[in-house]
Length: 398
Image 1: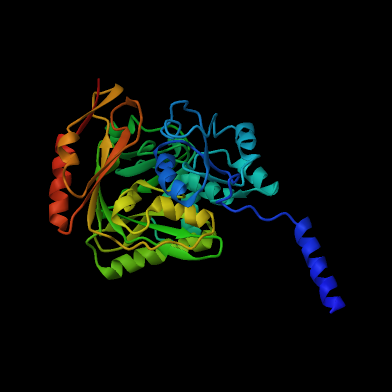
Image 2 (image 1 turned 60 degrees about the horizontal axis):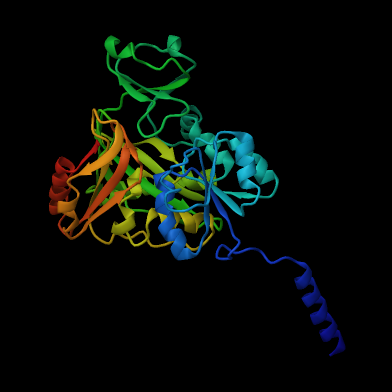
């Protein structure tokens, strides 16, 4: 009896000396996000539901996130010291944009901070040349490519696609070069040069993985793109493609996140070629445009799933609630200035129509200013409503 009592007292003493691991719902837990744009803004609602305090680093003093919460440090997430200063009091650090200073994130990891997705993953993904080589090395099907330091190294076999290795975002830094006239406008910077793929449609799968290694994928979606903006015009969920094709896309997406050993949310964009093959186009290590519809149209939104993954919580169900179509609200061509939205009111009364305005005060041509998700039991009816909204809702300047 005496030995048992002594052992119990010893254990209690050890517990009193060992600090309890901080939990995400503790009042002093801080989750730091590099970036304060619309993706961060859409993280706020599920974070509030889970009791997670989000803190943002963004150079914009009028960012979409800062309009809602005051937990923002204004600064450059590409500056090493700024990222180190931001991360020093955070319990967990993540990103809503991959183009950040990963040298600082590696240092924070060495200091014992948790950073998800891991800096090593961000290093692979934020350089499209490294990303493409990783696909090649790991047997991931992708378009043929080669790397150039500048355009003097390009073999002028038209048509081809030029992608800047770093810095491209929201369709910027990518262009199709069809002939000598197009070649006059190429970027003279380190680039990936790809064969122009003769594809039928672009598809996407979002997959999540937590620290415990649990993996879960969302149903595949199909996308139609605006050629001028190089951005999604329409997203369709479900994709309307075969179960076999969806299973193959999910298998590839899950293989990628597992082999990366990544913790977080990963969006994989595919080309479906005319002969029925899947080729991985690009990947993004964060919530993504191809998952905005999940806020209403799936049991668990991509933003809640992102938080579940990096906090090592059980992953949520990805099941579809209803068929949906998502459209981006882009700044109108020729409009630059303080934003004004036209035509929204008439659609707010429609059942199954959900507007998300990102809070950006200034618009410019093709800037992402918001999105709309249309849900309906009949996919054809959802498409018709989405097309009507796209034709009648305009984002202009005052």
